[in-house]
Image (cartoon, rainbow, N blue to C red; front, side, top):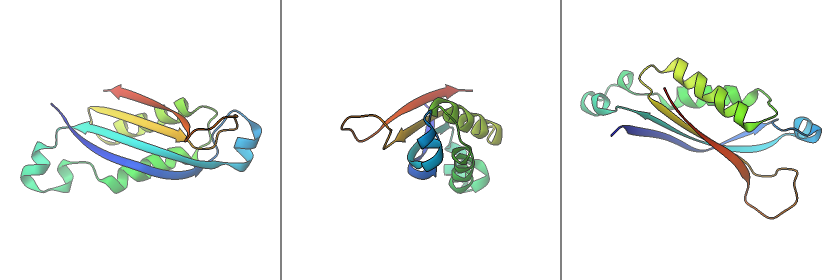
Length: 119
């Protein structure tokens, strides 16, 4: 059983979407990330070098959220790729991106995607 680090409820003002108004006006997106890896050594040694720095992971996610894309699927894949490239010890990543105010009719808290990738 692997351990997990999570970053939940990260909010980013970004310009993702298929419609021109989404690319012009932007909106708030909520991102949740679950990073799966072995944290046993970090638990024993109390050494930041044996785990994943939350602040660094946040910055990687923020950078990808700043780059406009039509599809949230594309953004999520970029986030996963950046995390895997930065952290060799990372075994699995789950990314959930929620668009709170998509330009579609209806009553809901948001729409979005969730992807899970294993190295």
